[in-house]
Image (cartoon, rainbow, N blue to C red; front, side, top):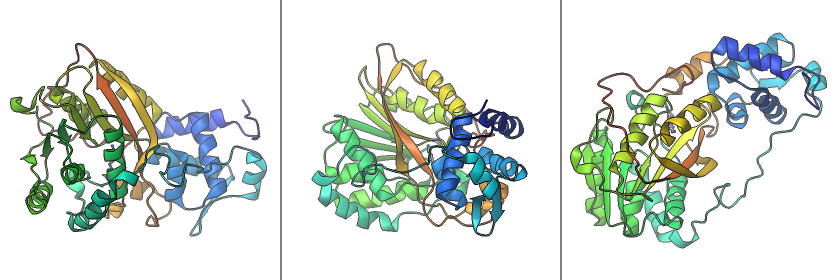
Length: 355
Ligand code: SPD
């Protein structure tokens, strides 16, 4: 079937990519990829704009190249003249999000003191480690997460749990003096030490535990919190472990959870599976904000599967990895995840590529 504005069969390309990459890709994904190549030649920027998993994007580029529609050179990915003819009037991918909030729908105006302090403090943070799949968000993203949760009524006077905190939201919360209690459960002792050190220096209290979330959360933390934040690796097991554990820490119906989930390492089929899995815990999604979180390039790109798969070995020139921010609330009868994953590698699957 042909698409308006395009004389090629996007459905057939999508089905070939899905077969070869073993990742479910739709004609819409291919349409966005072609729209992205109309706007940019940089591989990482094209992935950002295409919004489907890296291995499938590179597989698509290979197929489009074979069809003579795209060229790959040191200058990047480009539509050939044949490609331009075929793609015709396809929807161009443009970023027209609000220039003040970056499409997040929230303002940092009331938090300039916290912003100034946090931007300074975070400069001395530990660098990302590959063994934990770390890659933190820009400090502005962390501030926006805080502001959104503040606006939704999930911060002031609340008991707040953070599961994994290389993004350092606990420090923003501490600087605000607004929550009643802040707890961080984090596997990396460099991070828990840094957070504790900042807490002592800035005069706020944070309860910090160095802990591997593959194991069930200790009893003292269950049903004790009003709000939690987490940003899990993108596999279903890891998301279930981190988010499911977060739900066990929540106190009552109407408690809130926040987590990030990307499309750079998760197809919409995986999104569907994740949403189904979480709905079984009796929660309801209240917000999903596209591209809310922007990640700083983590520094170990060359060691990753994404790098191996890329037909062009060019380091990213700007941030390209973004994720949606999910918020949900618990309903009557909610429950979380107490499964033990032992020492299994829960960080990688077919669609992931940045570990
Ligand atoms: N592996 C480096 C990039 C990691 C980014 N993680 C994003 C998690 C979003 N849920």
